Image (cartoon, one colour):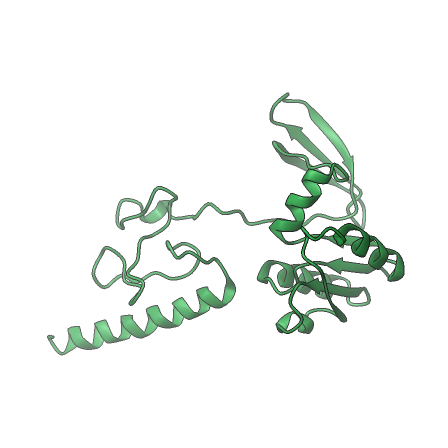
Length: 208
């Protein structure tokens, strides 16, 4: 059994990671931390601890003591502030311009083969796990000639109704130009789009 520390557990991405770990390794112990003490993150972990901010002078010492005290096997930092702090500290190596080419292992991940996009060389890295990010580029190509989209590829909507540039066509979720890409926002948008689509069809049927 391993003990995993997931920081910024109040965020939906961290909660998604915790959910995957819980489903894949039900016997693993999950500890979550966040700068806030009261939120739904406690539902995804076995233990929730309040953490200092990543830019706090005592953050490194606090994190080190926590890892040692709780015998943490895997630490997964999930906040932008922590990632920035770690990148500036020089204690963690960040590999950018790397394209995953192959994942090797028998029952579990053992190695990753990736291509360095700068040098073009293939390199090997020992690893025990992989988290796949779906990316931030909206898959809106199929409607680019039908609906108005912005320079980021997001579908432009009326924030009040979720109606697109084409009357009677509604969109919701991360593919739209909403500023927040979170589960709860997408769910709320979906409900709003559905209700307004219903009103549109009802009024059209009545000839209004």
